Length: 189
Image (cartoon, rainbow, N blue to C red; front, side, top):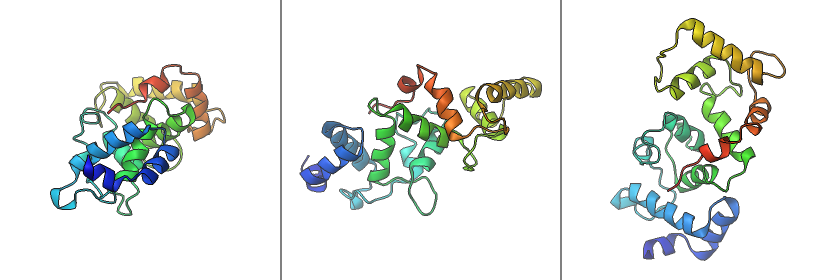
């Protein structure tokens, strides 16, 4: 724990605790998990960017159908490569913690589901979302008619302004009526 203490002094630890939904203990655990992903020659560097491929091997993400999107949404890399530094890693864990608010969780869920990053969930985003949830990635077990009907139903329930897409506020409105969302949008280290 000596390396942890040197990188995360009391002031930095308190700052992280204030800026996230994580406790000091969870932050220290997150640091240990992050540091295990860092190559030996780069140990104890919170600014080191862990490649997305290594992040995806974490047991908490390994089988998540949205794992690549999660990394890309939380990555602040200029290269847009999904790599995470420690601050990104904490943001990710904070948003998925059981203490995060519905507003924070729904905000990040929306961005994870917005596959084309255009600020709306359109028919293509919804199709990819359905395929991910059914375990088929880019392919579907639904017929084209079934997929169209399902997307039509989603839009009918959530597209309040009837523009053919779901924006963030519409998404958050729908999520606010889903009691299981907060507990299902969670990753525990």
